[in-house]
Amino acid sequence: PNRPVAFQEAKRYRNLYPLRAPNDASGSAVWSDDLCHRSLYGQLLRAALQIAVENPHAAVTYLDYSCSGASIEDGILGPQVYVDRVDEGKNNTKPSIRPVSGDDHDSQIYRILHDLCRREPKKRDGLIICPDGDFRRQLDFVFLSVGGNDLGFSNVVAWASLRDGVSSAIAGFLGATVSADEFGSRMRDQLPTDYARLAKAMERALPLVSAPDGIFDPSRVVLSAYPDLVTDANGDLCDADLAADEVEDHHPANQSLDMFSSWLLVRSARLAQVHAQFAQLFKRMGELAEDHQWTFAGGSYAGRLFDGHGFCAQNLERLSDPAEVLMIPCWGLTERDTQTCQSSLSAKDRHWRPYNPATQNYPYAQRQRWVRTFNDAYMAVNQKVLYRSGRISERASEAVFSETTGALHPTSEGHAAMADAIMLAIRPTLADILSRQD
Image (cartoon, rainbow, N blue to C red; front, side):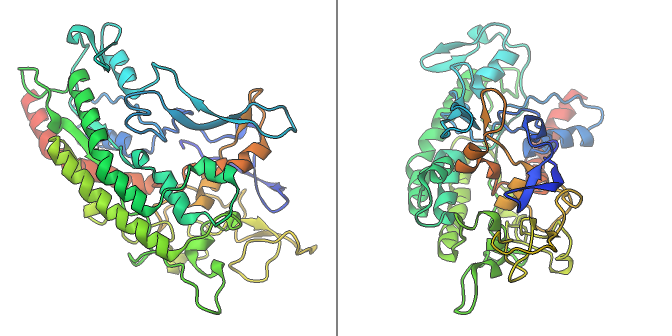
């Protein structure tokens, strides 16, 4: 977010964990777009800013339609279901949770045509177009980051991390689990069709040209690769295998979700399968980008930019720095240093550990990991489900796991690295564009 949530020092959630300050709708994280969780730190915006910084004599106009949770069909070409939820029940009753969804005009392709076209966009042969191509101006680039949600990214995360037997409500928020094998099958069978439909829609709808003939130039579509999210500081797969005498929270991977350890558990075998699918996704996206003659910004994966910066990575020389701590701050005592606080351990001498969330929480401080953990999501986003009245529904928020929205996505540092990868891919074309404008 543009501004993360802040936390109180004196009051606590369940008398154990950080509580938002203030703990009402006004205490939410601040975004450029609340429904889409769009911020100033996103990779696509940062790439556009970098174009402007590197070329001070060029005027850069950037239109941002990116939206958290969007897929090709549900978000780009058609309306989507947003990450926000509404509790339609009455206060203190059983939650009645409904996702917020858009209408027929609530698609990214419609919004861009609404801004670029001098006339009202129309649908023809199932695709939205600008009548008679009456555009206000042409485009130089279209930046894309899409494909993971189409395959069920959150679903495979659920498969890899949810404990067996967790509540259906929690699993429902993350989505019905999708195994690594099913994720791979969708990548093989579904992604080519989805990308082909997107390619056709963009060619029909967008004024993306590079020559006076006005012919659509697909090379100006820039598809950004997904990075590797699951490596430790050495670039190795995050480890969670337990020896006979070990407990789960011994491993940093499990410390990163300790607030939710009754629901979540990192399992090395499943994590390894997901890791293998990331490699296949990079390969598949590159092949499909080539098929459609798009520019593939694959540097964030091919350049191994995230090696050493996955969700479990820590700088071992700065483990006392709150930015490097993976555990959630909690109030109380524990039997061991790596354990989250226990409500059953009563004592008068309680304090915040391992750091004070009100005075030492800096979500944008430099750190080893470039991937937001489940605990990080709570400490930065902490999204709440609201009643229609605008009040917080704590029961609904907990039931659908909403505080963890944005987990296992890049941090601001990660998005900066991904923006660098985009710039590496477009600089030759950008130089050609600017040379012709001199």
